[in-house]
Length: 215
Image 1 (tube, rainbow, N blue to C red):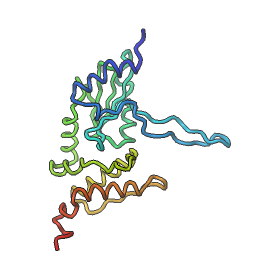
Image 2: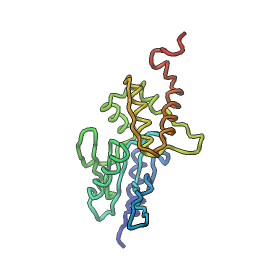
Image 3: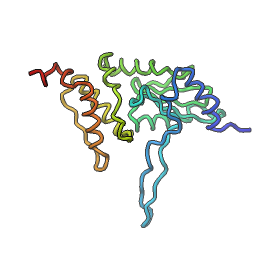
Image 4: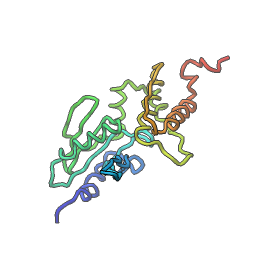
């Protein structure tokens, strides 16, 4: 009987992720991250297909780091790589993987290289590579990975996560200005609140030499 993509995911991909120290809290399987664009066909609106990634991999709960796309085992591992790269670009991630369950191909956006790898890198491997490429010190790392405020029951959407994490990282790295230009209807208040929340939790004034509150 022919193997399907679902078979590849269940029998091959998930076990390989577990073998590389990814756990269930870090793996989001069949993760839909858009509702689908609304287009007008004649006089009637129609919603296009949602975008869904086979595996969204998170280093921490609020810090996604990679995506993986699986194809049936009889196909080439590279068949899903372009799709994985497109998803990674949408999600602002640095690592994308295409696999048929047996072979794994990695695209590293930090170096632009594509490589056949023996297995999925561990979460720590990817994080250390990202740290080195973006100049994220250990001190900054602990603060950047501070969780969002989730008590409202709503988690930020993917584009909001990008804005929040990149803004907080820029501030932690000492950049004095960060310009965000979100479109109308993208919940700017949510983004602003989460940025303020993380900076408050991190004691932002302390990070900048206690310029605030010292007196």
